[in-house]
Amino acid sequence: MNELQQFFQEIEESIKQDSFVKLTLSKPIRKSEDLENVYLREVELKKEKMISFTYRFKTNDKVKNYTFEAAIKELEHLLQNTFRIATLFTLEKDIAIRINKKGKASITNNPPTFSDKLPVDHDKQKVKRASDSEFLLHLGIKDKNGKVIPKMADKYKQINKYLEIIEGLLKSTALPKKINIVDMGSGKGYLTFALYDFLRNTRGLDVQVTGIELREELVTYCNKVAKKCGYTNLSFISKRIENYSEEKIDVLIALHACDTATDDAIYKGLMSNSSLIICAPCCHKQVRQSVKGIAQENPILKYGIFQERQFEMVTDTIRALLLERNQYKTKVFEFISNEHTRKNVMLVGSKASKAPNIQAIDVQIKELKKDYGVPEHYLERLIEKKEQVK
Image (cartoon, rainbow, N blue to C red; front, top):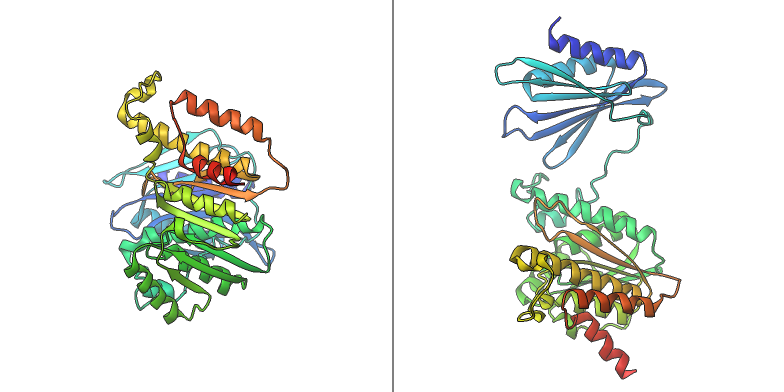
């Protein structure tokens, strides 16, 4: 019995013994292959067990369900023509088969990754929240045939990841029936259009979305696209973030607004008592520049690249603490994969019902600034000025 036959026998045995968890195919034979991975799992359709194949392409996923016999034939075809590695996960062990360039196969066994089987109900596959929307054509993400333009594949993934995050945040946020959303630093509007289209046309919510962008040519362009798409409650305004005034902003968004523009945006959200403040900070210069000429005792700050990263964290930690001080529940997480950009942190503040311990937070901010020799934080200064006026 050769290795390939042995591997397929292992699959058959795991299914018979009800220990099969899943199977993955990876490492395409050809680098130009559009199909990146295939994932197999058991599903139950009309009380019949089948094997579901999720084909992961660069720009989309496709799902097909096979009987066991048909699944084995498809798997044989994929291993002979498309992939070099297949990994079988069972409750007893993990089994991987690797096929080299000469077609020789080798099998390795490892302890089991999973202790429980996956559910067999046919869950909905990961939804592309921006799929057939007209704005994708006008913004150059898809071509006239509805296919994602290869160089825009990463942007398309980013859009769908963004909408997934937003959907989760809105579910846990109390909002009025008519939601006023302001996107500060909207740029070319990829995410602004995606958000409006998803909330208005997919979710059926009553939303008014305004994009704030300083560059007039982008504002003109985005307003033209919004008109072409018939997005009557989406508009763009050319204005500096700090000069924008709106009495009520329910959801404040600022993605990659440079340096203190992120602080200006957060401040607008705080002054508007926004239910949700969503930021992806960028270009953390203010704190680094404020410590120039100040001797640092911390050895980590001796090296330029570490100093930069440390002050990025200090800047965003103080932002998060200032949000908490103003009665927001905060969380910080990765927005998109850092293979595309290192500026991938998302900072979210959702309005909380419990009053904060302001004194304790002030102590935390003071100690943090002292540890890193930071004389002041721009957002803190904005808030202090407002409190002094009161």
